[in-house]
Figure 1 (cartoon, rainbow, N blue to C red):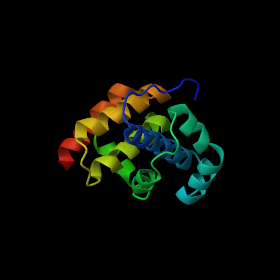
Figure 2 (spheres, rainbow, N blue to C red):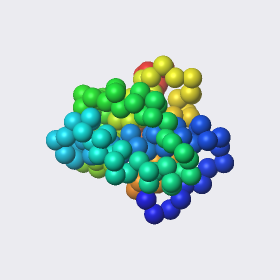
Figure 3 (tube, helix red, strand yellow):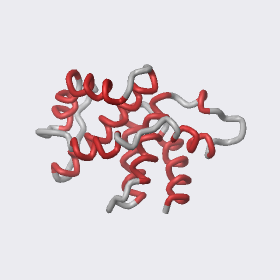
Length: 150
């Protein structure tokens, strides 16, 4: 990551935001490789976790939240994304960055969380902006899915 994230939020909230980015990065690597989540998490922890914590200026990402989301990761969620694509669009046309963001967002929307769906969607829109994804696309798909869930 090239630029520091600027947050004016309590460290506990920033730590959750960092966990979301870590989840997106882990899912992204799972999509690109044939590695399982356990292996990717191990590599992520070894090579990238400290960089992310430094970027967010926190002592530690919220590992409990990271694990809560990532433990619910399943490639079958891709089918849910497919259901919301416009006619003529396929999963192959979506970048792996956007797929990873959407998968993480879908998982978090399905968790029994005290966060509002708008808060969760806003977090993933911000991640899409930071990671070169398509924020409007992420917003549209997560919004449609969230209406089905809640």
